[in-house]
Image (cartoon, rainbow, N blue to C red; front, side, top):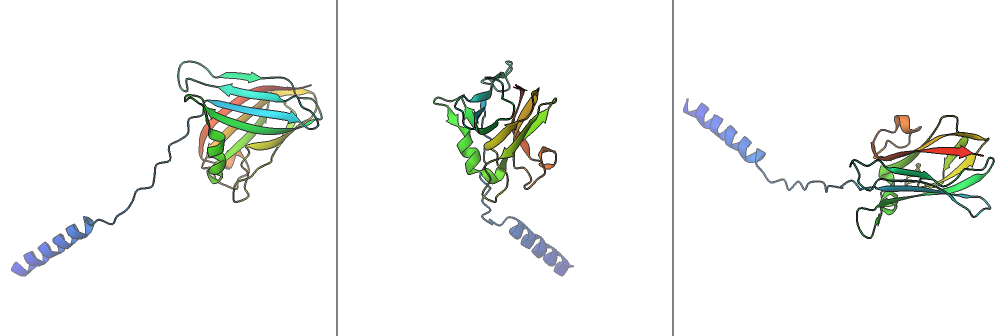
Length: 184
């Protein structure tokens, strides 16, 4: 009986010692999500100089005020535009350019462009992550025939890459904005 008690105590002590060992497991650093108050898509027509801007600003975040959404003009049918996205955190002074962080962490981000409501435009990615997958802070947009509808821009954090679009990308939405767009 003494041997059983001794063995039980020895096993319990060994398990306790092993389970309490200091394995020096350093926790993963927390990568806080960036605050994005403003998204601006600037579209410059090929061979032209007057840009079209699509912007959403939500300076109070989840506060009571709705985002201010603006579109500076109409697209011209048959014209191809070179687009760039700028993301800002305007809750700090000076404002922080979040686009730089998205591009530095390109493997963990992707923009998606969703066209709706009969809008006749085609978008194509112009920049890519370090593995050659779509990133989308730069794009081309080709305006088709006279039409109107919506263009929704969505930034996903940690999407599955490669993917066939927003539907199978997964990940978390960092920002999404819908713009009413006209092609004349």
